[in-house]
Amino acid sequence: MRTKPITSLVCLVLSGSLVAGCAEDGSAPEGEDPVAEEEASEQASSREGWSRLSGPGSSSTGRSSPSGSSSSSSSGGSGGEGGSGGEGGSVPQVAPEEACPGAGYSLSVGDQVSIAGSTVGMTSDAALSCVASPGPDAVYRFEVAAACTLSVALADAGFDGAVSLRRGSCDFEVGCSDRASDDEQMAQHAEPGTWWVVVQGSGQSAGDYVLDVSCAAPSCGDGVVNTLEQCDPAVPAAHDGCGDPGNEKACMFVAASAADACEDIGDSLSILPGLSIFPASDDPYDNGDASDDYAPECGAASVGGRDEVIAFRPQDSGLLSITVGADRDGLAYCQTGSEPECWHRYVTVREGDCLSGRVVDCNQDDASGVNALDIVVSGGQTYYLVVDGASAAADAMGPYVVAFDMTPLMPQ
Image (cartoon, rainbow, N blue to C red; front, side, top):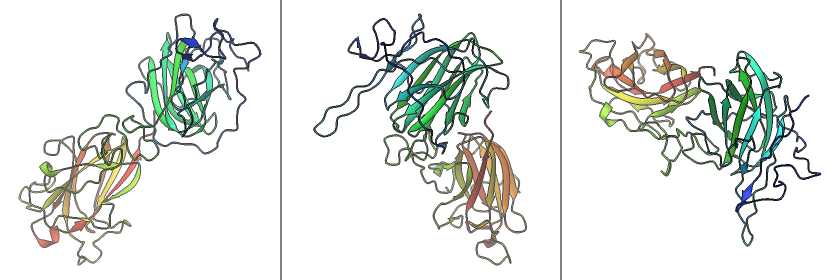
């Protein structure tokens, strides 16, 4: 394995002076080894809360200087009762390695590190899921001391750089970014342990880059679903189904009910990958007390059935299967036709706007009283499900649950 010479140091600056462990001339103190021995990595991978951000998750206070040197900041630890807080430590820059286990760094909550490097002269060793034609790559290893929001940003110059995040083992990828723009950004909830970042040229390219990595305290509104959070849209929006930061239900799903009409809609349902059945409680929805406000898009205008509207928002793009008219075990209500839950309906799905949005699909229940729709949805978009009795008769109203089965698109 071939490594590049150490050309710069990552140092902590406190009150305008360099801390111990970093010489003023930028060289490592004699006798100190900046590379920590690799610890055994955990085998259980953490996929919780993966997201991509529109910008770097945290700005680094230590950007690369024109001479290629880099710096890092680290917040001091808080003092316990009767004690004082500790100081953040210096982080010497380590020469990137061409293959696993990677150049080693330690990260505590509050740490930010900016690393100037180059893939020129390296070889191509790693396989990245988002790169079809790989170029040379560099591997970095980060020992995360405590749970945090781990943000990675890559600024490349003169080549098309891609970045891959790995967990559990150096070859187990949990995220990959190779955008059309020059810069890459991603963020992930990180549990304590070993994480790897691979920088690679796409299209067999190579060049210089600055890699910024930060370990920030988890917070509602950072766009990453951290421990004890169910959702985190980063930018709160009306009817997104997620409690806004600062609220009692901050970053938790907000239960949505079926509304009598579009103007009565409160929050939307948040649809995650896999099977979700609503309402979550034992009491089903029921259109028996609803009014007749809309005509189904695939039925006669004079249907006259009572209708309800449910707003929902998929968290991912992909294929969504919607079923109405079956119980929580997937068994059709209409077995003999005399069951109190057996009634007939139309179901319409609109996109974007409850009244005028594009009709994605519409159908009438089948002989067993089940409506089944398969639609392609976009993550973060709001959709509206209109459940409409097939007539004004008694057999066109009653209780129901809605099952959503979400299959996300494979990451590109």
